[in-house]
Length: 479
Image (cartoon, rainbow, N blue to C red; front, side):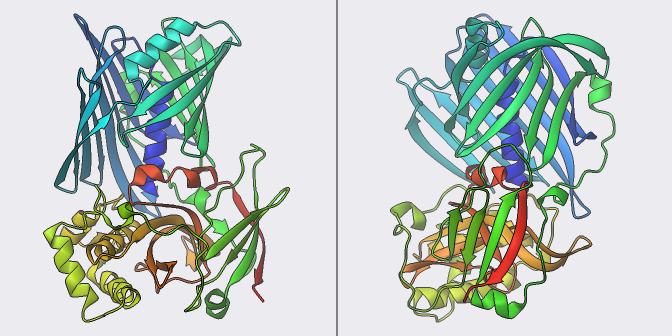
């Protein structure tokens, strides 16, 4: 969950804070009023080249474990906003991923990705109309700042090589309190349309487009960035636990027998934002949206259960930046873990048990490691178990994917009978998509699936509109 939380912060902030023509801007980063880090943006012009760099460093707690994160992006463009190259960097607890791209005169984008020590290269077409930092700033400048002005831009996300639509509405000027005094600033509201999970941001900017305040509500939190001096921005951080708002109390205890059989949940949103709650529809979970609530029916599959989902595609068995299933280390572990199992289902069961014992150090301080990193350094939490298990399955030729969601536990962080953020793997075996959870004692109906993906943390946006906004109104056993 942590890396996906960071993905959302980075994208929302990059889209909202692209208008920063001042040469050097420092900002203090606050989570619900508690300082967790700093952001530093620079813009340098040399001839016909503009280089914009944005670096953010934060510290977050997860159930008492501190996680340090550093992320940044450097964009190089022509003075009229034509993209030339970019580099995106993310480091969580010492685990680093880097994405570098060069846009050629033929419109092709050459990309080098480095995750977990593994390097991959590929070429793709530059998305038509996609802009980087300077291009976005110039479009904002072109559209002007008359109150009520509305315009749309396509922002390129360097971290996942996709575009995101950003709708902007210019508001009125208003007085804003900042660490170094009150200023009259222009209010701009934006909607960042992240893969089915639109995120609202509000920025307050100077006449020269310099962002002085940025507000990003997410997961029940309020992320705020305030422009101030370097000394202010880099002052000591305060502790802030990101899991608190994500815990969802159950209305009662759920027995192991009930979870093995199947449960029905009635859920609703705790806020009035109007954004719908989002859940995955899988072979094990069916979501039905009613006028004011969502009904979830979750049950482990019977041996001969028919599938209601699409069949796997070729990509479900292939390696990617996060599931390096053809790496020698992964192939060796997959052979060892599968043992003498013959069927795909038996192999996945063996691999689930293998991963559970292979990751010896259960550690919440690991943000989100790739499968190859886990193979080399067997430590981490549920996400590390999930990506390694999915990669091992693919190494055996079994279609797999990674699920992002919540799981029921009897006790967590001082609370009883709660659903907590979780990740696990699914494999297409016996004609259905079946779940395997190596971090716990296998899959049961206490697992709520928010979204499914290929292990890339940047693709789990859908769940962010649900995490932190969810309430369980009733729990019943499926009869």
